[in-house]
Image (cartoon, rainbow over all chains, first blue to last red; front, side, top):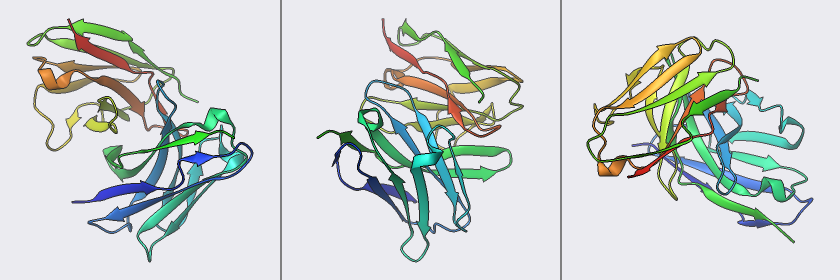
Length: 120
Length: 107
């Protein structure tokens, strides 16, 4: 079955760039949308953005100026970069498959999540 | 942005109880409403998509209903493994948004 695994540094300094990768195993990255979602400690879920396997993207306007999501189909991976981070970007970051097939349009497979702390 | 609200924010219930959680959207979202369950330290898990379709592998005690702006998640007979936080999420329009969550704990 399809599994997702996030990887990347757990600590990032303020003003620097947060970089995470999600590796898709057990299935192809093709023909699906792939999202990043985050959850600050003790708080709710915030959708960051998604990428289609073809490379088209859609970002949350609240983060759009600082976020880039890319896909590498040869490696079955997609990635997230958040620039100019502050303490407010401290959160558990999840990657998820965004399954869009009417009537379904939901995050049906999630990675385990990775905690990223922004601190000097 | 479409704002999602949930009520109650938390509830205490006993094993075997029928539990209902309400989700309201700030504008009509047709049938683009999903429900997730999250246990501490774990990723959310999709329970219900498109208002009332139960995700594969999810027990039949979970059901969803509603339309337009008002939706409900019902657990017909609460089991020990159901104590968790539940989130609704709309996929009608971007940005995709979640409700603030409803924490279900043991009475």
